[in-house]
Structure formats: structure tokens, C-alpha cells
Amino acid sequence: MIDPIFQTDNYQLARKLLDVTVLRQQAIASNIANSDTPGYHRLDIAPDFAAQLKARLADGDGAKSIDSLQPQLAQDPNARTVRPDGNNVELGSELVAMDKNTVDFNFLSQVVTYDLKQMKMAITGQVV
Amino acid sequence: MNLIAGIDVTAGALDAQKTRLDIVAQNIANAQTTRTPQGGPYQRQVVSFESELLKRIGNGPPLETVRVASITPDRSPGQQVYNPQHPDAGPDGMVTMPNVNLAFEMVDLITASRAYEANLSVVKNARQMAMTALEIGK
Amino acid sequence: MSPLGSINPLSASPLTQIDTQLPKIGAGLPTTQGPAPTESFGQMLDGLVSNVEAKDVNAQDLTRQVLLGKNDQLHQSVIAMQEASVAFSMMIQVRNKLVESYQELMRMQV
Image (cartoon, rainbow over all chains, first blue to last red; front, side, top):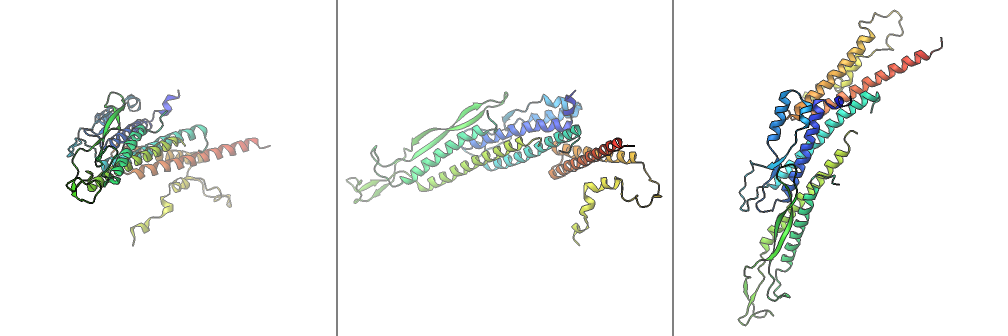
């Protein structure tokens, strides 16, 4: 009976994307930490996650099917390097990616907060 | 309990870069040292890093942190300077100076401190994200 | 003339739209023979609810566009969410006041 309250598409989508931003934060932390490790290849979210997400959204059964999707890390196949040690981390672009990721995270948490607040207001009949 | 995502990876890197900065400082400080407890002029020390497996998320590649693999002396020969008044001068008046190149050391210093700052800003961002997460629903 | 000069901040406020639909209680009082209301109180409440509903749907829509990466206008989504939130609180307050006045009437000694 309680479950359908949390089944709005945006809420589920934002929740899943929050998982993604937390995972990406870890990947970026690892990339920056290893910016001087010879032979290290940069990590990012596996590119098939976005494709799977789009496919499930296109299927139309929305919220429920997103829940089982798990983002994974993978070595970034597009990163190139000119460094002799084979490390393909660019410190600058990692820092930019991290800032972008933080903004994404803040936005997503606001979306989730908004949905929860609306629900609380509707249930209690009090402005929160 | 680990509330701040990825912070354990960064902690290792901060330690490693700090060690590298210390060694650079030691090299610069000893740029003119011609007598050491081991005998002979000071030899430039080189820090090398290696990655350390931390954890694996799902079946993707593992998260790796960094640690100092070794601090090894640079074996290249030091410069020979003609200075017969020097207490460490050989019978021919030549002194073997340490193999420290200040230009190299400065480059290393800047690279290391840039890496250290980058890791620090990761900590800052991760902390801010955790604080935001605590505000969800408020 | 500055292009910004034509924007009236009050008319852009989300509240004015709701406000126009609210009962002007004070306005009808002095003359007991005022003009007949064009819509009933119930219709007006209905309008308020659907207005709030529309704002919420709009906010959800804009947010979804941002979540799916089709739009990078973050502020539009956040503003729409806040507008919907304010409108919703407004509706809740109207409802609370209505219930309150109803209970007040019920308590009245005849």
C-alpha cells in the first residue's frame, strides 16, 4: 500500500542517478589519486549504463524497472594519452568532471527532497 | 562506516604526494652536501609510486589507491668541480658534487604540490556531497 | 529601453495566478446586491486545484528533461519545482483555513 507513493518516475530516476554520481565521485577520486601512477587507466561509469537506462525508460514501465539497474565502473575506452608512462589521467579535466558531478549530485538531491516534501505536505496537510 | 564516498582512495594519495614533497625538500636542501654518513656526496633520492588494491564494486575494475613503492637513490654521477680549497677535494683538486639538479627538483615540487591540491579538492567536494546528502528531505 | 524593463516582477510571480482565482471576500461586502458571481465557490476551488496540479506536472516535466540530459537549464527545473512547492503550500493553507472555518461554523450556538 505504501510502495506506490514512491513510484513517481522522476523520483526513481533521481534516486538511481544519485547512485551514479556517488559511484562517479569514487571513480574521479581514484583517477586523481593515481594521476602519477605509471600505466594507470582512468575509470568512469560503464558507458552501457546510459544505454540501458534509456532502453528501460523507452519500454514504458518506468519506475519499477529502473530500480534493478546497477551502474558499474569501467576503464574509459575513449581516453587517450601522449604520456610516456601510459597513464591517461588529465588532472584538469578530472577536476572539472568532479565539479560537474557535485552540481549533479546537489541537483538530484534537491529533486528527491522536493518529491519527499510534496508527499509529506499532502499526507500531513501541514506546510513543511 | 564510510560516509564519504571515495575518501579512502584519496587518503592514500595525499600520504604518497606528501612523501614525495618531503623527498624533494630533502634533495633541494642537500644540493651542496659533499659529505654523508655513508661517505661520498649526497645522492638524489627518487620516489616511485605503485597502486594498491582497495575494493571492487560489482564486477567492474577495482578501485585502487596509491602508496609509495620505494625511495631509491639516483645512480647518475655527480658533477666534477675543480676546487682545491674544498675539504672534500681529491688529490687532483676535483670535488664530486651531489647529482641534484635544482631545475628538475622545482618541476617535481610543482607537480607534487599540484597533485596534492587536486586530491585536497576531492576531499572538499566529497565532504560537501556528504553534507548535501544529509540534507535530503529537509 | 532595456529589454528587462518590461518585466513586471509581480505579474511573473506564481502567486498572482492563484490569487486571481481566490474569493475577494472584502470586495463583495458593502453592497448586498452585488453582481451575481460568474462561478461558484466550488468551481473556483476546482480551478485552484487544477492550477496547482498543472504546476506540479510542469515541474516534473522540466525536471525529467534535465535528468535525461535533454535540457541543461538547471534553474528552470529548480524554479519550477519551487513554484509548484509554493503553490502546493498555498493550496494546503487554503484547505486548512476552509476546514477551520467550517468547524467554527459547526461549533456555533443556535
